[in-house]
Length: 202
Image (tube, rainbow, N blue to C red):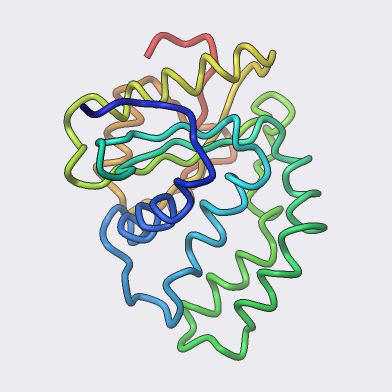
């Protein structure tokens, strides 16, 4: 039976797998970089380490095939990331190991996550990432994950949450639009920034 439940430490490998297999604008990023752990070490691992109580997964009974992960305070998360996560990230992913400019750019992003915080962060302090393997898509799990996360953030007194995304992930954009996410003023065609209030009906 497939269900949504809180993240557990034993889910970490599955979390990394889902992140990797959806990391190319929603497609499989396996082999895209010289180290398959690069994307998860930026977009999954630190979230589970920093605020595991804001991570929820879709458990098929055999494995985790989707998740939503978030932090309640993006600025505090960036402070923690720089102090606690970044040294290990730099050691695991030295710039000189990059196979091409695309990989160098991604490593650079992993060294400066603060750069993705939008100017609206005071009003939208939280941010999220959500990923589902193809086997779960189109079945309502994405909406249920967002609904679960918004309730958890609302319980913490967090008023709103934002996300950044690839402009090439058209199916994800359509999903966010259906749920009521809207572009923030800092959003740009090449770097969409979407937000939603935690009391929104999704």
